[in-house]
Amino acid sequence: MLERQKSLNFQLNAPVSKSLLEAIGNIPGVESVQPDRIDSTRLAVVCRIDSPKSLQFTVIDYIREHGATVSGFRSGGDFSDRIIQLVSGENSALKTTN
Image (cartoon, rainbow, N blue to C red):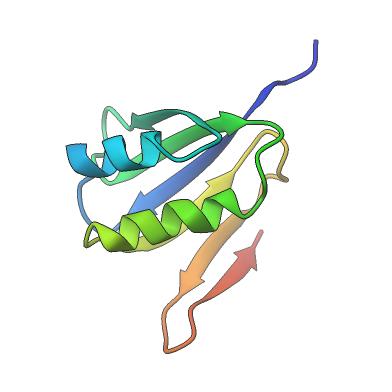
């Protein structure tokens, strides 16, 4: 059976708000948004396997628009199992770590 979804997992600097969950849930390609039950600063976004890889950056933009920042990112499914940390600065960049 082929996997039909992929998961994008975000670590935020603040608890996930209901308005952020609703906003991300309305992004094309997103099938569900699931806050972590234990850690309110973690968020899983489940999207279709054929969603563009740029979807993760769209989600990050929505997070920023709601006043939070992303301190960590992990992707699964179609993506490799790598941890990507945001490096803050004038030009935001992603840093891949193993």
